[in-house]
Image 1 (tube, rainbow, N blue to C red):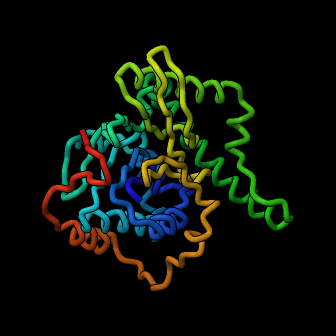
Image 2 (cartoon, helix red, strand yellow; image 1 turned 180 degrees about the horizontal axis):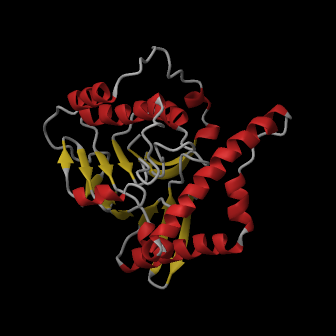
Amino acid sequence: MDIVVLSDIHLGTYGCHARELLQYLKSIKPKAVVLNGDIIDIWQFKKRYWPSTHMMVVKHLVGLIAKQVPVYYIPGNHDEMLRRFKDFKLGSLKITNKLSLKINNENVWIFHGDVFDVVMQHSRWLAKLGAIGYDTLILINRFVNFFSEKMGRGKISLSKKVKNSVKSAVKFINNFEDTVCEIAAENKYDYVICGHIHHPEIKTMDTKNGSVVYMNSGDWIENLTALEYNQGAWSIYRYADDLVAQAIDIEKKQHKKDSAKEMMASLMQELNISGNGTLQAGNIEAA
């Protein structure tokens, strides 16, 4: 795999599917990784809730950095405090607010997308309240699905039903996509990649300045999706369709519960690396 783009993982929340993400990460060998925002949910982070699978995801990503795989971290609104570390580099890890790539002579623009969220910009307290409500809805959804599957009816997504049934939510997604593509076309980008709205998508959008391919990596709360670039083409990865990843046993070894100091020491040991990683995946240049 040349590039994998992940966003909206929300580590540290009850809705995060860290186990499934870890299975996916163990099934691929990417030449470059783009973490496009809301990776760790600092808004809702609680010391009392940090399962071992969440730490295993972090350690896997650190392991990629230790192997000199380029990892670009673009903070989102839920991990926005990392934006103050813009341009920070550690080995092959780089924190940046946006990323411009040239892939096979086509310009690709990658950023999280919350900058176009009016609620985020003008009513931050309302956005945080909404995030708490969303996480609560996801938690309730897990209980509903437990009984639904027992009754042989399969899983349902309450959040998707809400989004698809509320006209203002559908309008917000459409406006978001239109705005992103208009600005991308004005700046001569052929592709634009976002996260933020938890709605995986690849489609060509026509604007007054030409067409743009719009892509969204989705999330690891309800959709369990990512964007993959391989053999000259972009595609949406869906965990639900990946029987190989689903079969991976991530608990072959018994993981003891380390203390916070022990886990941090382990991470620092893995990060004791030198050199600067560069994005080299096929005919790709980082601008």
